[in-house]
Image 1 (tube, rainbow, N blue to C red):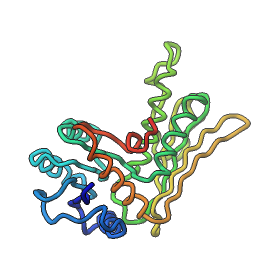
Image 2 (cartoon, rainbow, N blue to C red):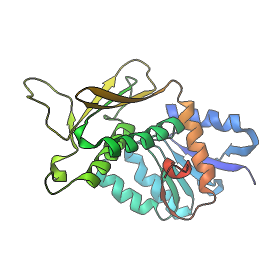
Image 3 (cartoon, rainbow, N blue to C red):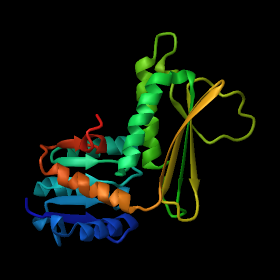
Image 4 (cartoon, rainbow, N blue to C red):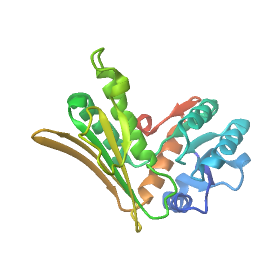
Length: 245
């Protein structure tokens, strides 16, 4: 198989530089492209404002697309995903293999434990991160909501399950059943920590992933780019790439 030619959007950012370094590590398996015409895949780690242009460019030139940019409003992401589905696209809030295993474990825990166990999400990132909660925390929130929705009954409508609570302050009263606490911490140079807590009377389950080097995300993005070579148009995620579905 020929070397994978990669065009990076957001090449000057932290993740863009990490992907460039990961390509250098791969040697003959991947190389940087200078323009969209000569690339096999576009990897986007830019900003939410740029994503629409990146998707438009990929579709116009028929190029595969890997999107790691986070911070989009849900409605905007849905519109962009519909457009991105015209080419092979992997869109993920986190490209770490370990984090994607965390997604799978959190799904299993939410399914088995159900809303009888209180759920809390805690994430921490470096002081320069622009969006909160992180894309990874939002995906964990969605996973718990999806599993609780499946278990919802007429006696406990989904409208009362899975409601996110972003932080707490003052006289909040007793914690309502089905609430999901979401807490974002920012400071220093933390690459990315995520913890999911399922707590009941008498026991607590905690699932934690800690990233110490953003190269893990870059290598995951390149893995997704290689995987896309064999795929038809559509929007996939890292669970597809890793065979976790």
